[in-house]
Image: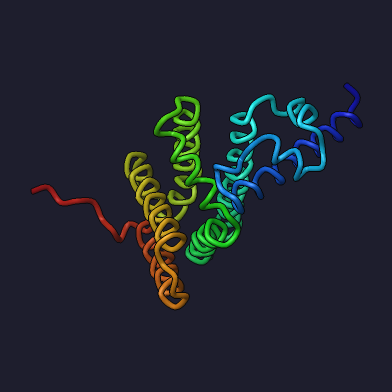
Length: 209
């Protein structure tokens, strides 16, 4: 395959993933049907299946593309902190806000909610869910370690898991259960502050009883 053809194929795959994401976010998993996505992309079903043989192949591609965007944001903040450690708090707060806003306003919550739902019943998506979370914990841990270099690896991992659980929970609540904009804004602001406190270690470690 020539580089030119490979480049065109990559661009086509990316366009198909974007079209599929729009169907998932706007219409839900029930309407995530190959024929519908092919129509949205302006192509025949057989051509779509040339790139993605099954619905699950395309679903996985959508989820991975969404995750890649989030990981790029995390890695960017880690690099910013390396470049200027004095701004670590600001950078981490910006990261938390960016992740929450992406999940809430750009449809990210719908994509990851779909993954969570599928992971309960499908081994393929259960493995993908585990892979994504473990990767996220690791990358988030790099940022946490730069904020507090004194902690050991188990504590880094624990804080990363706690921050992820908090962001996940806030995303679900504000996306599905909070209609009032002022309440939503207050919840997001409080979440941003709490995420930073956890990264710093203010949440502490449970005291032995």
